[in-house]
Length: 332
Figure 1: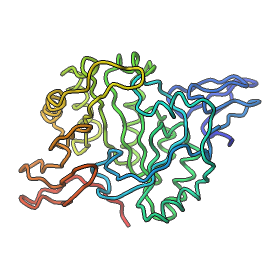
Figure 2 (figure 1 turned 30 degrees about the vertical axis):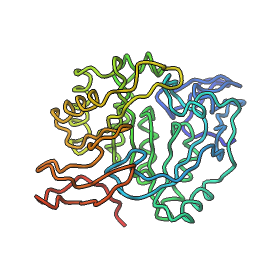
Figure 3 (figure 1 turned 45 degrees about the horizontal axis):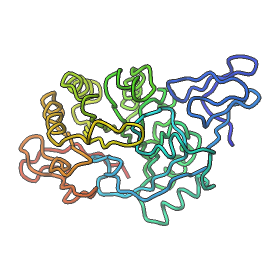
Figure 4 (figure 1 turned 30 degrees about the horizontal axis):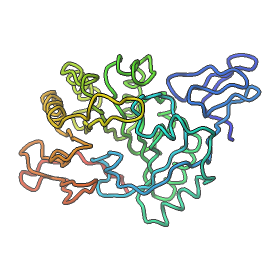
């Protein structure tokens, strides 16, 4: 265990956790909604610090981050726990129904050492929600930066703005799930308020962190044209037209056994809507599609050819018309 960061006392023994937008008030002896932060005699502790439950080497494209350091590989890590209860979660075994808190004891320094020894370019905090293992992540991020590695998060976007601000200069990029309209969050994720996701995205932008958005499309749940248009127009207005949008196919899993997998036609329709709203970098995922590659917004030439999470022939400028592609590289 490790004493938590970003909490405050609200009574003689109760505390408020300020890591995520739920801002749980936790009584003595109780845990927060994420079930991995516990109030012990008026002190909030992280129960997952140093408890690495999942570790793997991934291409950065698998996060998915298509415009940040394309073609590189990273070490992906996670602990158990989550602050959402998505009924279709693909990692439910470690996010929700993991039983006792477990994991291999691996220190932040050891995580970085593993990445370096494997010749990797960075570390991804992913699989479960990294906000809930913030103390573990932030220490790892500091050591990673000292050793020339990048840091990326894959997040549900429910991190508070003050926590995002604390990662300025440490977190390089984030992929945030935009799950759907407010009703989708309430019915399928146990989240009553969608606005904190927008606040977090603005905070990432303000702190100079590269942003990409993923929208998992479930037919009949979050595929209405008006919702697609609202999402795409908000992204363009608040994050910039250079922001990549990943539209991915749903497959029945965990508690959500229907509808059937998202059709390619639905994905392509959504892509067309997002592009009509002014987003030039819109990708289709979880399906075989030519739209996993990057096309020049000006002339339509392929500038990054992708297949199986592999980026090939990466061009920072279109070889045909010279248009500069919105790719993000760290200054070294």
